[in-house]
Length: 203
Image (tube, rainbow, N blue to C red; front, side):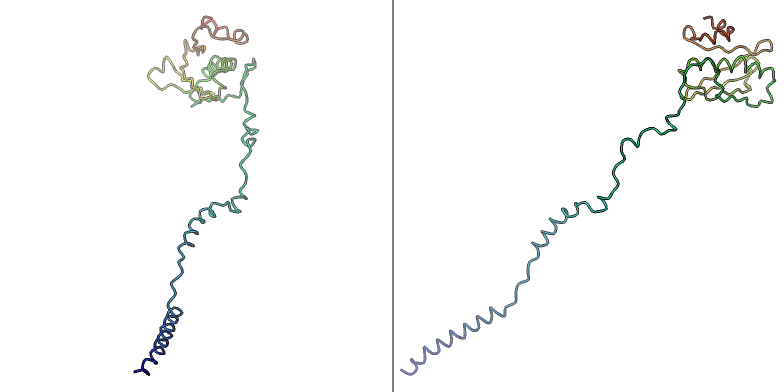
């Protein structure tokens, strides 16, 4: 019995060593837990917008906005003719006789001298309508053609239109006369050149 008691501490020591070896082996050989990359992913997500918002070299190399001077009128815009009253008859307006061959020469001459020329001079002296761009004469094909044989269509540069009928009395084209609210603003040149129209209006 005394020998068995003497071996007891030896067995206890051996057991402690064995348990220590087993525990150490387990600690050294146990599988390592995977590294958590979630923090790195989170950092990338937070950093990415900042990086994307940085101007690239192409953006920095973009051409600058045009200076205000580039919006200045071009030479063609600045050279638009201005309207100024003048005593000289403006011959730049386009006059068109539609179906000219069907208009008797006597009527054509009468329309030119009694309608077109005073019309151009009057609105040249009074440029509120703009510059006369085109004046067209057409043969009236309506039922009232006996009383009003011709129709006149005028177009001004500012978009104003003025259309009227041309009358003829005793085989002669009648004088044109402007329609005025009150006295018509005839210039001295117009009064001396077309006293018939001034008398017709009653100024």
